[in-house]
Length: 319
Image (cartoon, rainbow, N blue to C red):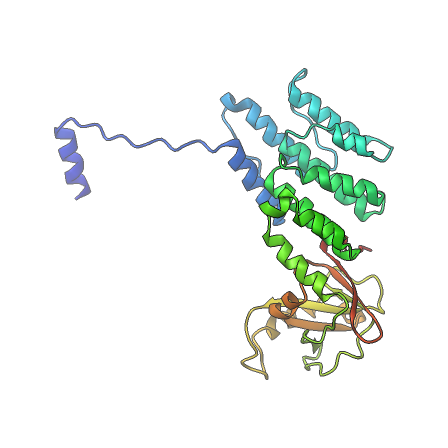
């Protein structure tokens, strides 16, 4: 049938035109790269034709910011892009801690510059190198409306994690009432649940021992709980109980051999995990009720087993 139609078209001297595929915009390519980066995938640098030389350099700058603590500039000298990239490199290489003014005066028109600043601050804060004032300035600068939406979301997540860790409801309210609260409202739902869990019990969290026996009472748990699904990311102390979340959406339809057990058995085979007191938290819903969805998370409990601190995600202490 296809050949008959083609022959008829040729006989009628008709030209069949196939529409050209629209070239991928810089915005789309940057979005794809940042999504891959956020999910921990290996990010490939897109190839662009010579006529898109500036776009190619912007993508190289972004890719370099993903790969290196101090990215490499590819921009032509005496251009705004070159000036901005040099300012970013200078800030990252400085031996002095940044100031509030250094963030305010910094040009961040390039997505690669924004990501470089994000990674710079994230590392510095995890290592305890910045004061709270500098952390807040850095978060606020990256939450500006001009920032790429994905990086802006990372900065908001960071700010909310720290507000939760410090039980700072004023910071939560300020963020929710700002423009970013209107632009990314879904993130606040999770953290409002976590704030509401402070002072409450963890009795809703169903746990199983490493021998797959359901825990009837949570009274014997340690005062510090480490929640992390990565078997290679250990608690800071062996005195801390390690809860491995499986985030299973299924129900306990088979108590003798639940669907989640096979995955748990594989995790428990990891090297050195037997040195810790390990529990399994199979069900995603249990954690969502407490507002816990980012890992690692460290919970501090009082003597009655109530939650007094939630250090989640970006605010969770690292060894």
